[in-house]
Amino acid sequence: MAEKVLMKGNEAIAEAAIKAGCRHYFGYPITPQTEIAAYMAKRMPKIGGTFLQAESEIAAINMVYGVASAGFRVMTSSSSPGVSLKQEGISYIAGSDLPALIVNVQRGGPGLGGIQPSQSDYFQATKGGGHGDYHLIVLAPASVQEMADLTVKAFDLADKYRCPAMLLADGTMGQMMEPVVLPEVDTAPVEKPWAVTGTKNARPHNIINSLYLKPDQLEKTNFERYEKYRQIEENEVMYESFMMEDAEYCVVAFGITARISKNAVIAARKKGIKVGMIRPITLWPFPTDAIAKAAEQVKGFLSVELSMGQMIEDVRLASGCRRPVLLCNRTGGMIVSPEEVLAKIDELVAL
Amino acid sequence: MIVFEKPKALTDVPLHYCPGCTHGIIHRLVAEAIDELDILGRTVGVAPVGCSVMSYDYFACDMVEAAHGRAPAVATGLKRAMPDNIIFTYQGDGDLASIGMAETVHSATRNENITVIFVNNAIYGMTGGQMAPTSLPGQVTQTSPYGRDIATAGYPIRVSEMLSTLDGPAYIERVAVNNVKNVKNAKKAILKAFRNQVEGKGFSLIEVVSTCPTNWGMTPAKALEWVENNMIPYYPLGVYRDKYADAKEG
Image 1 (spheres, helix red, strand yellow):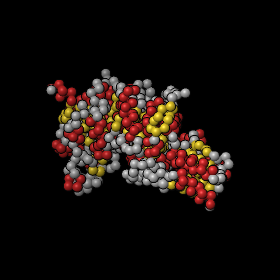
Image 2: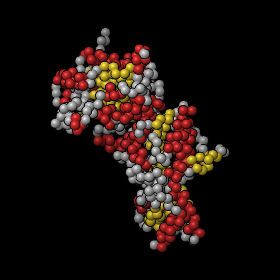
Image 3: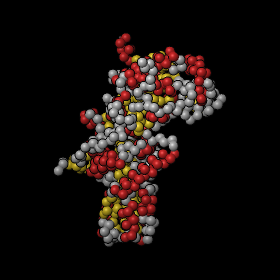
Image 4: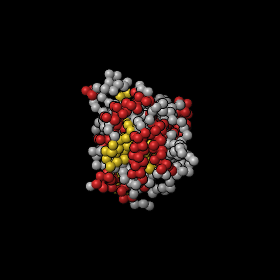
C-alpha cells in the first residue's frame, strides 16, 4: 500500500499527471490553479520533461496540440477565463482526434468574474465550448484523491478514444489539502501510428488536420466521431450512488457541491426523509440512464450547483421531465451550505 | 543524365496556387533544402491558415495543420517533444504578422530551435484580397478600397527588422523570389535556416517577399515588377540578424 501524503488538490493533479507519463506541460498563470504550473516548473526539469510558461492561453493550448500531434501525453491547466481562450485550440484538438488533458479549476464568471470557486463552466465543458460538433470527456473530482485518480483516468480515456479530456474541478478542490495516495500507473505507451514523428523514409507522410474542404468528407468525419462518442457514452459513464436504494427523492450534485450535499442527505435521513444522491463523476458522458432509472423511483430531483443552473438541464432531460427538478444554487464564488441544501430538500418534499 | 527533377520532399499532388503566384517557387526551395540536408524522414512541417493551408498535401514530410497564426506554438510543442526532429512552419503575412504576432515574437525570443518560412505578399490571398499587416501605404485591397490609410489603418509592419531587435533569434533574413538572382539568394537563406536548426543554433526566420497577382489585380509579370518597384523599397532585402556571424566578428 502506497503511503498517504498531504497535498493540495492542484499539486495532486500535477504529480498524478507525471505518474501517468505526462512529460509536457504548457500553461499561463491564473488563479486559482497556478500551483499546477508552479509544481510542474519544479518537477519537469528534474525528470527530463517540458515545463513552458506560454505567452498566452492560446499559445499554451496550441503547444499542447503540437505535442499531442507527436503522440506524447501532454496537458495544460487554467481557470475559467483562461479556458475560454483555449477553446479555439480545444476545437482543433477534438477535430484532429488528438488525445490531451485540459484542466479547468473553475472560478466565478462571466467575464473576469472572481477568483472564488464556481461550477459555471459546466455548459462550456460538456456541450462543446468551442466551435463545431465535438465533445470532451469531462471528469469531475470531488476529493483530492479523485483529483489524482481522475487525472490518470483522463489520460487513459483520451488515449483510448483519441479525444481530448477535461478535468473539471473548482477553486475549492484546487486549493484544499487532503491526504492522498498517489496512483501507481502502468505507463506502457499506447501505440500511435498516426503520430507525426517523422516518416523515417519508411511510410507515407502522416497529416494531423481538421480541414475538409469537401463537405461530404467533413460530414463523414463528424458522423464517425459521433460513433466514437456513442461508444464512450456506452462504456465510460461513471457516477456514485449514495443512499439511493430506498430513496424517494434524489439530489444530483458533482464536485464540491456533492460533498456538501452528502451532509445534507445524511441530515435529511435523520429527519426521516428518504433522500439519496447521484454524483456524476463523468459530466460527459452524463449518467443519463442512472437518472432515468431514478426517475421511476423518486418523487423529485434536486440539482445542487455553483451556477445559475446548468447541470439541471441534463437532469431534466435524463428524467424526461417526469418528476419536478428543483435547483439549489449559489454563484459568483459563494458556496452552498448543507443547511441551504436541506432547506431545498424540505421544499421538494413539500411540493 | 538527370539535370532537373522534382525534390523528394514534394509529393505528386498538383499545387492549387494561382498562375504566377510565387508559393510554388518557395515550396520548391524549402523542399530542396530538406533534400540537400537529407532530413526528410525526420522533418515535421506546420501549415498555416491562408493560401498555403493545404501545403500539408504538398510536402512529403509529416505535417500538422495549425489554427490561424498558431504555427509557431504548434512547432514549439513538436520541437520540445522531439528535439531531434526538424520542425518548420510555413506562414503568410496575415497568419504570422497579424493574428499570430504574439506566437511569432515569443517563439523568436525563446530562440526555439525551429525554422520559420514567412511569405510576405502584402495581402490576404485565400480570403480574396483583404488588407494585410504588411500591405503598403496606399495599397488598394478589398478592405482598403481607397488605399491603405495610415491615419486609420496604421503602418505596415517590418517583421524582420522588428524581430532582429530581440536577443533570442539566431538568424533573420529577408529575401525575394522575383528574379533569378533573388531566387538563388532565397535558396541560400532557406538552406541556412534549416541547417541552423540541424546544428542546434536556434530560431531562424526567412521572410520571402512574394507576389499575389490575382489579388493585386496584375499579370504575373507586372506583379514581379511591383515587387521590385514597391515591395523591396519598403522591405529591403538582406540579413537582419546572424547571431553566429556577429559572434565571430565580435
